[in-house]
Length: 104
Image (cartoon, rainbow, N blue to C red; front, side, top):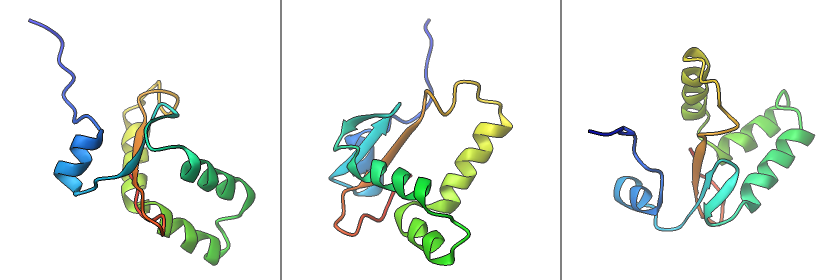
């Protein structure tokens, strides 16, 4: 007997096997598990300094993250009253592409 954590582990193996991504920034609980935090910090800085009511700013953010997926993720966390989110148990990944597109 034991306790099982029934979820996929977001790591380089998962990204390669399921999404065909060989090089990625993988961030878990605000720490880089692979890659670095540079892109994430730049995106957070952009969001902090720019209004998303400006269509150009919103369009830029859409090139950086999958907003539909992110919205679904946030709704599930809020609906289930996930009490230690987003401070803990939060993981995200981004393919390391020159254009910077792609995340989860």
